[in-house]
Image 1 (cartoon, one colour):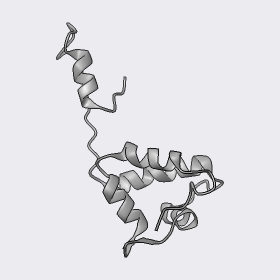
Image 2 (cartoon, one colour):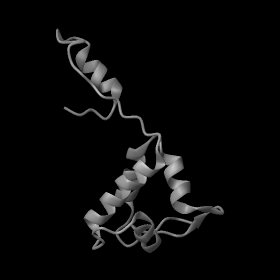
Image 3 (cartoon, helix red, strand yellow):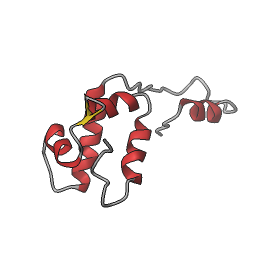
Image 4 (cartoon, helix red, strand yellow):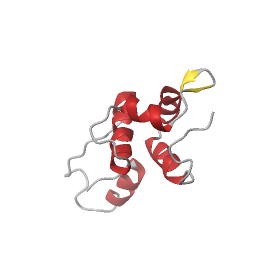
Length: 103
């Protein structure tokens, strides 16, 4: 079973007799390249860009810079500890602008 939030996992285990008997792995997003790869995989699942590099896709769908910083770095660093926020952001974009970032 996979839990995205540790507090939900802890709450469910709080009243179970199996507490402490399960093994778990904690995923901590500290590597921006891992988040870029997650985005790349999501993008290629929606676009006709199978096997394309992240930068190639990003340059097709987003502006190059935000406030003078390379846009993917800006967005990934902002969302690194909240990767779900980044995915939600892309999902909620209007279809005509979904693959463009605001300048």
